[in-house]
Length: 425
Image (cartoon, rainbow, N blue to C red; front, side):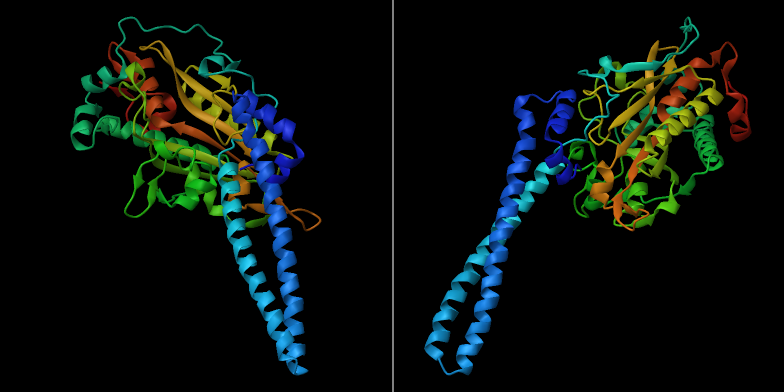
């Protein structure tokens, strides 16, 4: 959430940021509405403070008049105090309504894009910052991963439909072992890179989801357990980052590096066509997430390090990949700058997104109230970053499709110590 101070001090910058996100003139009015509401809040508080101060003075006068025996004068002032109390009560009610409306509007404003974010309307306008340097070869007569999964009994999509519904794949046999091998490989890589492993809850309350920006923006994409008012997590970023909600850390604590494996749950409403076939888009998938809490002066260097880290994993998996810088129209609500990684699916002849690495700057920490004490002892907002390292569903799809051959599916060498087999046949 943007701070009120930022919006008031940078009205033009805030509006320009929203323009990059393709807000029209009507949408830009939200910034002016926030400023007007903040002015109303300040005026209300000034009037309320004056009323309370006057009541305090009059209350002392009442006591003095009673002591001097002037009951009539004291009773007259008591009537005035009663009117002031009623007015103060009304002012407090107004203040609550103004503050609630102000918070609702602040929660509806996305993060301001970094200067590097290109203009654009959709994922077609994302900027390719690193292309795959080799020719991309479509495997002739290659099978898509959903047919390979059926041929080698790796994933039972029909059983998943029977048990839960479409988008809930059931892994079995070597398919399940490949999935588990990838999870362990990703976690080991994160451990070796200095990340602390976390096993978080898979359900979170609304305060947790709001703190990292899933609510109210992504409410329609989250599974909600209404009876308990809990949400299934869409990513480990949500519970892991919230470990530090309402926490003040010291500068010596930087950088805080956390990783966690979790199943992830997303409704993916509105998805259709070939994009949802097989593992291309599912409602439940496994993912290893990396999260960093960084000093504001270093957060963009940390972002670069995280991008390099994700790249190193894809290199070890020997998968063709490219890196995209997301445009304003495709940028996530909470992000200031995001780099997407896509792997090439040889049998489908298409790119599949497998990671997003983002810097949120202070957008999340303002909601989290996650601060650090600077050298002068003053509390400042930290920066948060996160990245998928990696999302398994599409990684599995790419491994199956890119490594198929006449004798079966070859397992990337780096995974063999985890799978305990080199070939699926």
